[in-house]
Length: 338
Length: 103
Image (cartoon, rainbow over all chains, first blue to last red; front, side):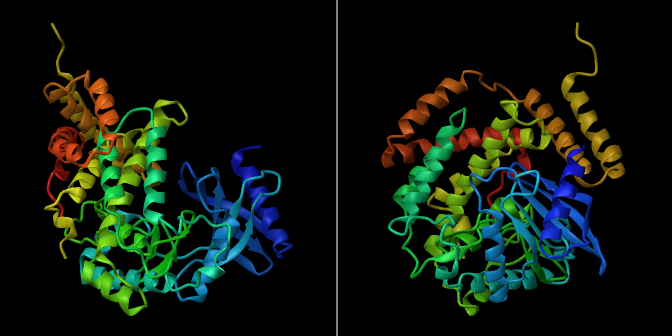
């Protein structure tokens, strides 16, 4: 039996067990195959007809939120008015396969960054999208963290910045070759922590162009919640504005499509509290994080853990992040100017 | 005597063929892979043409990394321009268009 057939059978069992006894799942496409998880486009057929949906099957559950946690977060976000897909079924162990999986409704719209940036370069839709992102983040960060699953990852409340630096150092030390630029960046981060926020928040952790589903100037859904955690809310807007997620559209600091004031004003008017020092710190920290991520992908190729040419090519993208990192920690850095 | 065309010229031609003929004929993840391969061909062409990519860099990076672990602010500040120059050298190979300061 092929992997696809095994997944179809397992996903069918999951949907049947979730209260749709006549359901049958068919895989109709692959959205992405990552190192963390596989995302499949599926159709669910039952007495009521055929509906499109998305199935995420986790491969590496060590460093990310479990699908059951993710489903709980999607519920919290939806209640708060953050646009998200609807949870249809979830399990920590797919029948017969054992991997955790989440099935959500399919949301129409653009996901591929180059398509989003092309369609939003014109007619001012980019700033409308930046406003929508700021509003969504403001609402997300207003969620009472006591409602968040208690076993979700959280940065140390005592010193979240030191905690994050130690995590970065641990990841850096696991790489097979030295990256002095990243080491230097982490040193800077440890020496220059921002003032902590008034209160912690539920942080999406991967809120960027590529993980949002977009209509014409509209944010249809925020997806890919597996890096969600409790921490400093400014991490999210800073991450969205990293140069690497602009995909070459450097004239639009917010995600390659919008202006920073549009994001910031909408964030504040939806309850968020903007802190410049934390914005700059997190942009620097997540730039170091992604430099390590790309280096790790290349290391997986060099070790023979994957034969993906895309992951191999990641090794040659590390200098982009290193360049951003050095610009961010230089005193005369234009990225911090508002 | 070496045969023509030379490697850098061939890599450029490979990139062009992939970008102009194969990318339009593919879609989805296959198209993404082809774009990536075309880009890698261009990177390798630039790498072949670039002077002195030192192979003894590895031990120098190791030494520097060890020194940086001491997290000495003065040393870090003094070494930053050296590291920036090295990143710029590598970026000139991997993505020259990135070598502008972001807005």
